[in-house]
Length: 341
Image (cartoon, rainbow, N blue to C red; front, side):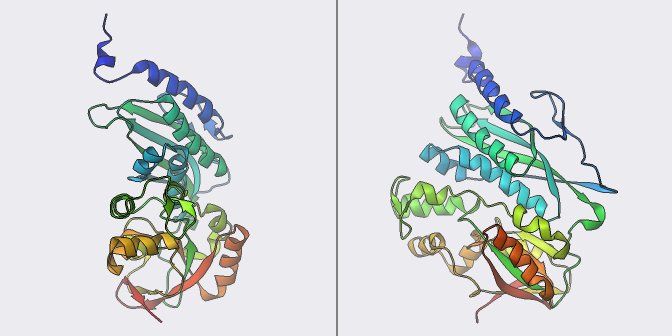
């Protein structure tokens, strides 16, 4: 008899093979806090010992249309690692230690090799942060996705001591802004970047990206940097953190400012990486739009007291992450303003 579900576009045998391979990768991420069986209906992790008032910090995100670049290049593991690092950074801004991640892969037809590559990246990112890939979902949705396309999202769970959680309420006028170097576009602005690169410039993934000596695929698939190794050792010195994602510096920095505080960003305090300069010039993108869409070379901003700058920057140097003093907090209407020297 005809397999009617397969005829409708859902291939259960492929799903079973993908799940078998995924389970092997998930097993490599299990920590001492992991409970339950792999493949169960829910993932379980213990809270680590030593917390008096533990608070769970949760966040959900995806990697946007960067997955279209991955599909175009046939390179799928890097976006898996992107997802982990993006999610880690999102809870890092609250001072949280990552415990576990759940992933969601949706596609038209599940290809075991692609799914395994995605989870290879997820597992690599989880192991780097000593967190468990606690479970996930692989969905075949042939009427929603074109062949070869997929979406990738994840939910992270972390923990922080209630009294140590960062909310932005410690920020004061006189504090300074430390910008941490990004590793390219990270996971934002790809709809505009793809249009400029593939349509305006007419490039393909194997072509050289202008002024870099690297391919388009290499530049656009650079992995979203995790700032956990650089920031975690100095949490006690940090007044607030802002992960610079969609919305750019202004749209994210304002989220951690208390009322009565204005952040003044020195627009000449760092040099944009070449990828952003090329996109702006080739795409004829205005400065204001560049600032709203892209991170412009700053992936994380720490707001700290002036006396703690050297301690904070030294921790970043130990992890080979460049930093710059890019502004200050002043008394004023809550907001972010750019200024040229």
